[in-house]
Length: 340
Image 1 (cartoon, helix red, strand yellow):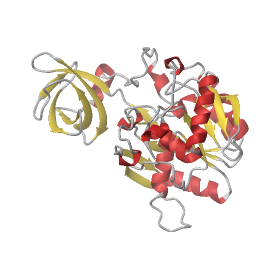
Image 2 (spheres, helix red, strand yellow):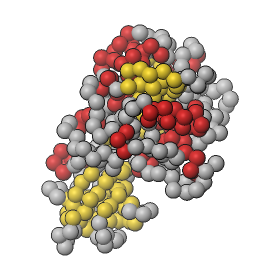
Image 3 (tube, one colour):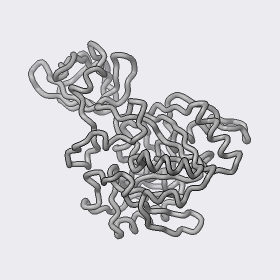
Image 4 (cartoon, helix red, strand yellow):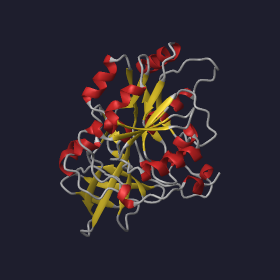
């Protein structure tokens, strides 16, 4: 297996720069794994593929305005991208700026001071604020849009799902951006169940795999939680022959992380909270996920590897080729794909 096996050509014009309105008017490409057939639909028609007793699992994380700017004592500007909160004052962050070594101090523009406590990998640093940074977010924080989006987002809420609830992500779980409150209500009225997990999205959403062999890639740890209520809903659905449908690769990783803790062959899934570094590659045997809703992912990313593990690498690359020809919009603000 080589990283180059997951490469494909994408015209820049296929990268969505702005979200479509309304949310559920995006396109939906449906891939049926048993036959390999494709169907082209509109997202609001997703209910045609769901049935009573199915369980949609949604990631309720909320993106924090994690991109903030600071000044060095010399006046030079520094950009900080907060990745993970360690305690009330300490965060792991990406730091853009020269000469920032351990014990270096910066002043947040319109906020408190911060000190570099430890140098981590690459441009990652452990930083400690002089007081909690969260109260300053409305004043100093900016939504950290992916680097391939060049258009300014007029409404920051469009980079949040309508059910975003738990603050902590550096990026949105974009498969869920297509849902509206009305569509969710319609699905529930049909008998589709809904449950929530939390995974705070970090660095690897944007990071390509640079190693020739993807098995040598070190995936960053992300914090996730699957509550007892969600575990009960999953177990009930599986007992009643309902399908567990993961909305987004983040939900997939949370579900499979929880499932991996079960050592008994027939044991039911249990509540789980803590870090996960699960890296799903072709050959992986899925334990919980029966179907997956996702967007179209970057070449050579961990996410295209994950969907390839679920549906087959050649089939995914062929589907992506069709999506490009059919004018689908790619990446965070792009269209959706339902894999059954």
